[in-house]
Length: 264
Image 1: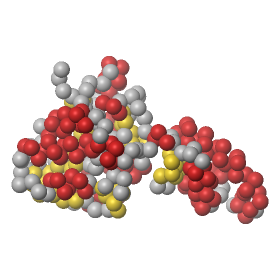
Image 2 (image 1 turned 30 degrees about the vertical axis):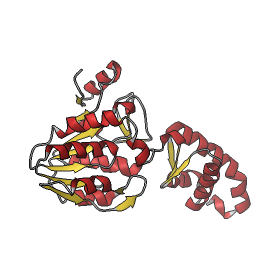
Image 3 (image 1 turned 120 degrees about the vertical axis):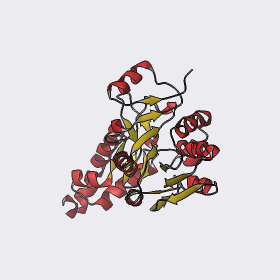
Image 4 (image 1 turned 90 degrees about the vertical axis):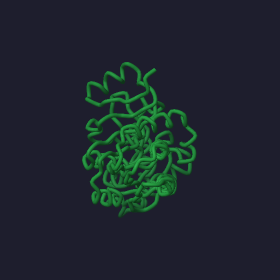
């Protein structure tokens, strides 16, 4: 590797930093593994580079890399305050899709927590699988509801289990209906996410369950987060609190993505 000469490595650092900043600006995020391969240096060197730039306020460090400051998902408590009325409306619309005795998967997040509260109001017998600590704690006290929390390492920002352990646990269940979160719906009609683990998990859940819906509030329309959720078009629909603008509505319709929103 070029790192075998420490002086050469130090001399190249400013060039690496410039390239890293360009990639973060263009793509929203970078991974340590990809950068190490590109520059032919060790991952530890890239970690040092990223820490130097993050300490200067250039971007935010995330697991496995770095992301543009506006591409990092806010914490759970902050998100809970955003468009609370719209999320409650989404919760009611989503809960209306659930029949008694169904097995329901509830993704982590504040919008899926609103779905949980709406389901609780219906008092139906259900089996609920979730990775969310908040959802599990709320629903386990409801009569006629059996709750299974899907394991994995707990992400303190999300207050939920994360990673492929969640998917492996979900595979043991015959899930009738799933409600999945998402970071944004791009102007091109793609559903995107903030992290690779989140995007992979949600993509695989789409294929695993009988029927899946994204629950995404209207503030996320026309925006973009770093990672595309593959095969998002196979979801039954996006449940939201407002109809998207005509252009995005037509794009989603052309992609075969249904929309469920309150009628005016």
